[in-house]
Length: 505
Image (tube, rainbow, N blue to C red; front, side):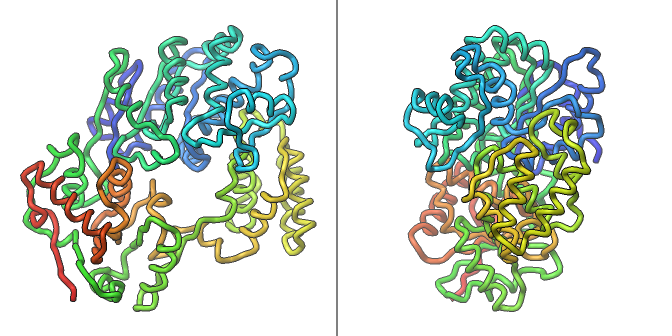
C-alpha cells in the first residue's frame, strides 16, 4: 500500500506530532510506516515504545513492521507503565517492602475505593488492582507518583526511549493523559499521538476525548489531519462526514443514492425486507448494541434465507488481569489450526521474556494442555504449569472461563470471524473491522450525546459499499431520526439528499 501525500507528510514530520485520523484513512498503515522509518534512521542506543489499548492492536503493529523490534516496547498502555515504571521503581518511592513480585487483578473481587487501599493491597497481597469507580485509574495514578518522585525512574526512561507512539488516544482517561504529557513535556521524550475523538466509544469507562483535543492545541505539537476515507464509497463518506463539524466540509453532493437505504418498518418481518437489499455474495455484518440483539438478529436473518453467524463475546474476554494475554493465546493455540507455540511466544507482553524461554519447553507444555482438554481438572493443572513457567499466576475462575471457551464450540467462531461471509456482532467488537455491507438499527443510537454519536460513527464507517439503517417505530428510533435531520440541517442538507427512504407497512 502506497502512502498518500498526507501520509507521507506524517511519516516525514519530526518532533512531537498529533494526527487526527478519521475512520478508514489508513491510520495503522501510516503509524507503522512512521515507526519503521524512525527505527531505521535512529543512530543511538535508544529504542521506541509503541503503546496500544489492546494486545490485538499491539500484535497487529508487530506483524506489520518490517524491522527488528526485539529491543523495542510494543504493548498495551497498562503493561508499559507496570513493566517500565511501577515494578522496577516502586521501591524507590515506597521502600523495600514493595520490592516484590506483583500481579495485576482488575476483577470485581479485588477492586478498592481509595489510593491508600490499593497501595496496601500491593504490600500485603502483591496485587495491582483497580478502583471500584471505573472512571478512575489507579495504575496510572501510581505510575505518575513514581515517575515524579523517583529520579532513577526519570533517568531510566530518558536514557531508554527516543520516541513514544500512542495509538487510539481518544480512549485515554485523564490519568493516562497526565502521565503521557509528563513524559513528553517534562522528560522531553518525543511523542507521536494518533486518534479520533469521533470514535470515542469508551466514554462510559472513563475515556476522556477532550485530552486528545487539548493536545491538538498545544504549541509544542505539530498537528496533521487525515480525513480521506479510503474504505467507504462516496455516499457513505458523505453520511459519516456530515455527522461532525470537522469533516462537514468534505461533503460533496452526489446523484446516485443507492448505497444507503433507510428502511422504516412497524413490521416484525424486518429481516426479510433487509435481505432484499443484501448481496449474499458480498460480506456483510449486522451491528447491534447488545450481544443478545446480535444473537437474535442473526437467527432472524438466517431464518429468512441467508446464514448469519453470531460472533459472541467469549468468556475469557472478561479476564482483565496480567494473565489475560496468556488465556487468549492458549485458546488460539487450541482453536486456530495455524496458531503455533511461536505465535504464543510472540505475544508474551513483557519485553525480553521471549528470549529467556525456550520454544521446546513451551511446545511440550502446550502439548500437555492440548492432551488434557477432555478433563477439566487436568486441564487446569496443565495451564497452571504453563503459566508458572512463563512467570504468571492463574486463578480457578479464570481457568474455568478458559476451559469453557475452548470446549464449547459456539465460541470458536469468535477466533476466526473472517471465515464467515455474514456475521452479527456488537458495534463495539466491530471497531477496526470492515465489511462490504453493514446493517444497523436506528434504536441503538439516539444521537443525543457524544457517546451515542461516536458509537454510530464507528458503526457506519465499517461499511464499504452499502449501509442499511433499520428504523422501527419506537422512542429511541424516533429520537435518532429527529436528531439526524437536525445534524444534516446544519450543513443545509436534507436527509433525502444523502439516502433513500423506504417505507414498509
